[in-house]
Image 1 (cartoon, rainbow, N blue to C red):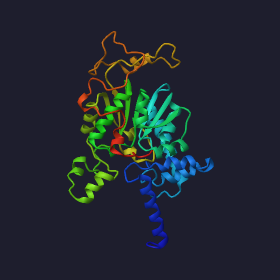
Image 2: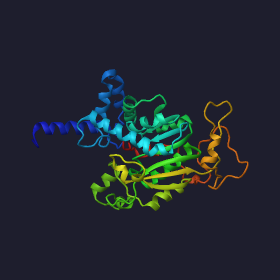
Image 3: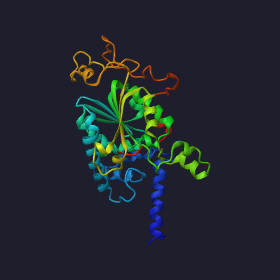
Image 4: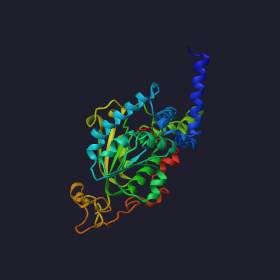
Length: 344
């Protein structure tokens, strides 16, 4: 019965759990006690505890999903389809891949068997702790973004699903530069974007809001910022990417998820010839990819004859990316926003 003590008590417990899990920020499950609780939970109860923790977040499960096991299975099935029908079109078996904003890891676990190695990053240590319990794989590592930066790794592919529509233009631009720096020369970017959705206000409209409620929502809520196709293209090309395609997802995948009404950006880091592996490497010869994907000089055109890359690919931004706008550190722009992206 609405308004009954039992209903009120349930709502209070939900709100209290939400407040504790967020620690007053958008970094859902970022509170320090979350990974500690999972680590101290007996192994046979750990999966159940991870699902219960995820249910405290406003976006890992749908609002009407009270059966956490059923919600987890729905997530798993939809992410297997996305990995196979969508991302799988652009992945090779020997790729090193970075999943940005991995959430509970359902998509990362579905992608991992298709590639050589996958690193999944998120800003929330708590949701990463849940992902390690729910979605482990032998070639999959879950890290906070700053730890990936410290590792000095480079990757062949960066993908990011259900994240950038919640970020301001400034943060998206910084993130794109970070991802450019993490990619090996010629590496691929796969980015889920929302284009011209009339239900979503633009960032300018949000910032023009003078009411207290609107200003509070802009600062603390998980907002959705509308963008045009031209805005998306400009953000991506200004960050050093080219060969950009903007593809309706409905032409690529059929899955029970709202992403099918949205778009996938496919782009490539343009600057140098893709690197060749060092002598004695047991990985397949990446030099073959210069023919498949093309070679590029520092301004995005075909590389001149005789151009080579070192055996160890470099991290850092290409010369084409304005140095004055380079943020401090790689892949921590989401951390600066203090946002835990939508789980996948």
